Image (cartoon, rainbow, N blue to C red; front, side, top):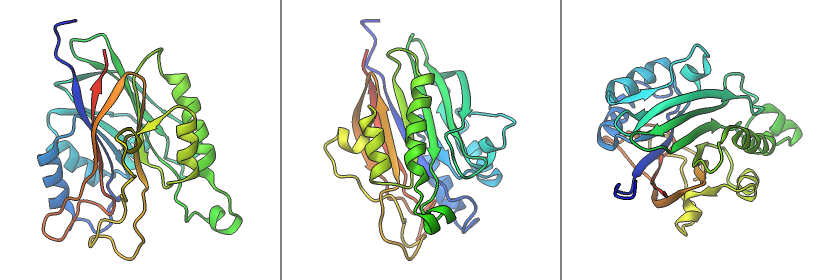
Length: 251
């Protein structure tokens, strides 16, 4: 193992905005996938029509194919077949108000190496939900706590862990995740978090917000992280911007 080159890979988290302004956004999403070809891609708000595009533009990747409808209509994970092999996967209930949302996860084996990687993604409940608006109830705090409980249950000893997604929060849920042992990619690079929503002019009328995050723990080092602006003409692939991070496996 000592003569192996260091392993680096690119992970992208992207909320692709269900089918809003579709098919106008289709060419932009196809171009983004063709150009970036992320080694790991965690998707939120996937739908059948967008999954067809993802499958077509990522032929060298695999994803989870499971009867649970959440994998088709909420979240999924793609990975490069050249780098990883699937070991196992699942979907954990972490108290989402939306019935098909889960903490989606997959354990991947680095090809030719003994090390595995736990990759997880979630889409926390939107701040505009009825209970939060009317009662001041913030469900993301409990969702953050349950995320950490699930990661502690799922992760093997010394296993590198990725958790990413649209967390609809930039304050208290993020504080809880950090306090529980996760490090976000912005902090790891000494950067101020960058706004991930909205992608103007495709999405209109909202204040810039940091909603999308990548976190890690274990033997991983962040080499670079970026909130990517990408357009074809005046169309972005989504109303969100993707968070794109390069990691190095520490062996």
